[in-house]
Image (cartoon, rainbow, N blue to C red; front, side, top):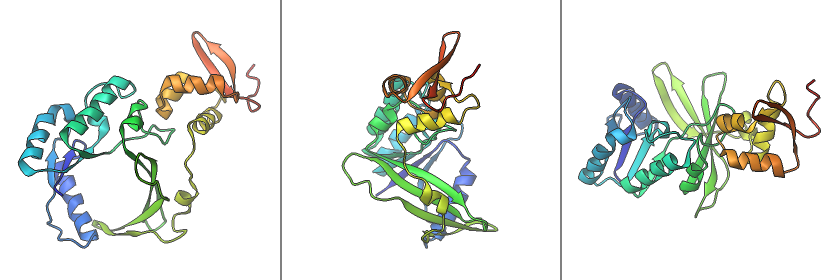
Length: 250
């Protein structure tokens, strides 16, 4: 099927170089083309009409957006802009793949929970480098509406002086850190975040910003799970700690 790659992140030259290396690593002609719209510095909303025209003209069946953070429809932590992004991609093409970023202290898509709700399949990526520079990438389906999730698949990317030179399935135990990482639930992510703070407590707003979860869902877990305790209040900000692990602050 014809694929359109919507590049909003990198220069045309960079993507051309990457495509050539990927082609060679897969045993293809390095000059094998890929339909690509290069618009670094612009948003999806800026190039939407151009994408729609290209999809019609070239009979595109799959689009890849790089990346969601460049969509340009508003604050990603609010449900309405996120719904607009999902609707816009679905209106452009029946099948789409969108690259998403994660918060610094989390493994979920940064932004409102509607990103997870709007996707049929969510694939989480984990990476690890060996001493010789080989890059391991673990792919784990963490949400699937109508397919099995399966087990984590790990791939190895090998490099030489000019860049990527080989791509293969990883050997068993080649990337132990990736193999050791297991999917955790929202509550465990909240616990880990709180315990990683210098004061061993945090507010729901801080957790929303860093973990990417919806604030109302965070507040519900903090107040109803029985595993958290209110520690202090700074003006209107309520801090929470983990019960039985919270030390006296004063």
